[in-house]
Length: 272
Length: 272
DNA sequence: CGTTAATTTGAAGACTCTCAACTGGTGTGG
DNA sequence: CCACACCAGTTGAGAGTCTTCAAATTAACG
Image 1 (cartoon, rainbow over the protein chains, first blue to last red):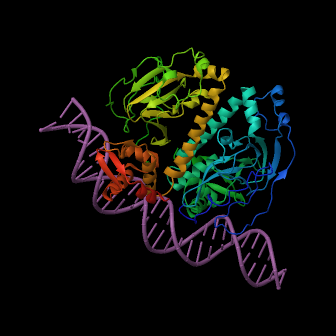
Image 2 (image 1 turned 90 degrees about the vertical axis):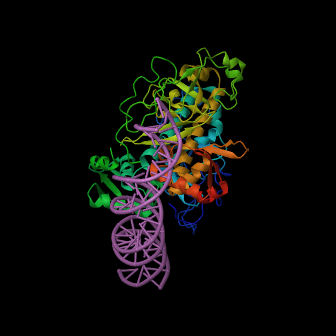
Image 3 (image 1 turned 90 degrees about the horizontal axis):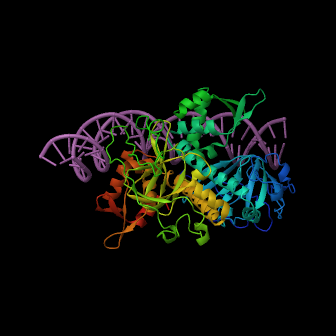
């Protein structure tokens, strides 16, 4: 946490969201500012989605819209797919669009004055990224895909137009703000409070699980570095805590970095 | 932080915002759940304020409203004054109103599963408390006045009515949500990250200052317990850090618990 | 002026961080 | 196919920071 050289903020926040209108797909900002390792342009434009038939319609921002409302959308809403590690936008970039996450997982990062980073939120399918675009003119976080991500890009003009014409969008926007505030508060009370082991336990209880081959819910963890940046502890501490949980049998590794959790045991450790 | 017996949540959250329509004015929840010490009913109803001539109109929720909009407000907007230590509402209370803070300082508290508390936000004049009332049905924090507080109570019905009729309120609501998210993120990165001394320094840089007798800005601190609950450290650690700063001359006590701060020195300690 | 609450201080121990070394998997080039 | 470099994860040891528990000191209040 008090690691790493000054990096991040100042440099490297120029052309994102620039001339093209897709998410800016830069590489994961590597910690030492060293050479780029990951693939280059990772966004794949997939055309204009059918919002009305969207598979996560009821989760997404346009959940409440009706037939007539869709006619008000005159600007294109593009769909993109990006690889894990891609930067969707950088803090400070001009904010011209909201992104609806259709699948995958995204971290929102803020850089501290010493150059280290803190993850302030995770966004999951159905979440809307960059809400600040509706009231401000620049993004406040750096958004990085943690897995392969599918998302829709909604220009702010669309939001503003719809806002004027239909009240139905308002409720969705307010609910999304509300969710952000709630997650931020939870982050503070659950993930930034108490011993490192308790934080890790709460984190494991909170992350999304998927049904494994045998139906048992499993979760793929983040890198130890990301876990540390979420919990406000060092990478080593995060690693130690997870290694401890493995040894004590509270979590069991199925595939590499994919675990089955004993939730009851975790709840005890979390201090419930 | 891992102190104090289980208290808070379960008990004592019944009649607030109950039959009377003022803020529920209970006593500060004392740490040991012991006998009530502070004054009893501390709210003083001050009648219906003149929103259009409100002294902090441009700061407040109704900043953008126009003459015609005010005619849409058919429910009374009451003005209250409460003493330091009063509880404005409790987490879990039915949320029927927003509160606009006209003067004073309020803490928003969440209780942890072990009964200890964490302060997740401070609210200052112009801020709106209980935004969640517009989208949910219960308050998510316990709001406690840290000083004598003057506030207006706006029933949610007023908000909903205005929302339907005028788009001007929307912008204000969104901006307030936005501010809440931003403050939450700042709380996490600035006040819950780094060493205890750095946190205290950032806290001192952040708290509101007033011009003292000689024009030098001074700040009245909170109790050491509250400072600890804000920064995620124990009361003792908070006390030690502040005592250190006093001894090293970075802050100078003018009146009891009121200080002049050497901001440059604080910035160094904060790690800027 | 006596009592109670809040703050300050001490000392010991627990917990994290730091720095460094080691491990195992991956990818590359010979 | 092997040797090598590289990276994320793991582990160790020592230093340093916080917490804990207790006691002393200072303000607050009837």
